[in-house]
Length: 232
Image 1 (tube, rainbow, N blue to C red):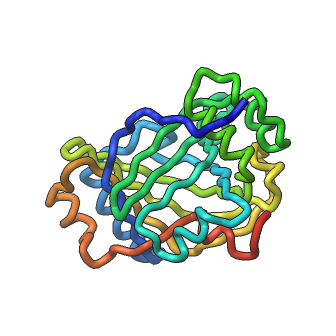
Image 2 (image 1 turned 120 degrees about the vertical axis):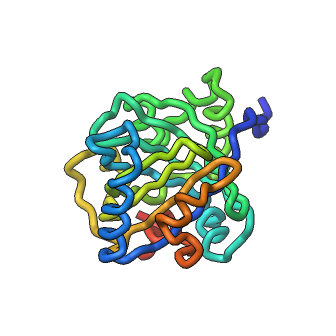
Image 3 (image 1 turned 90 degrees about the vertical axis):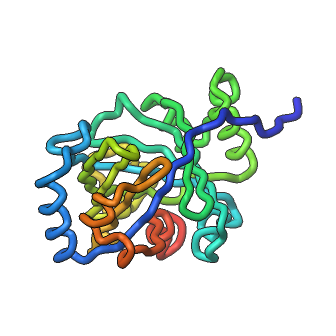
């Protein structure tokens, strides 16, 4: 039976801007935001660990799209939060300039272990179109290449549906097979903090003023920085 890529449902498009800030700037900005913005409801006081497994093909297309500065990029990843392995997501992220969109579907711990081991036939039997597309891509040499873990502190602002996150202690897990292991060995990749701002149609002036946004814009990819030293 011929296998062809599937059409994925429409997903919301948001603006996404990233900034790299020093530890000193990080401290000042977080203190400032804590005084005026509520924490995200996830985690403890808006803080939680994020662990992501990134996929790329034999030509490193996702990595090259980022490092070569292509306007359009897409990548697959599997992600979970804290130590909760009952809620794991397969995500396909699209990005064009500052606009981003994400399609996602839940995976079980057993399914993730099968994917890492290369046992993927169950994906084709799924009713979820994203899982079927993922199967096609895996059959066409997509593979897990890097596992990244970091701490996130998140704030929200209702107007413009703004979400502001501080990602710190960005580290790479040494072995792909240890992606689900809370005690996995890892090395730190980045001393600075990555500040991300996501919003819908507009970014309120209040947020611009709080962050001094126009002086901070940069390009950064946790996946790209994790590839230093090659495939895991």
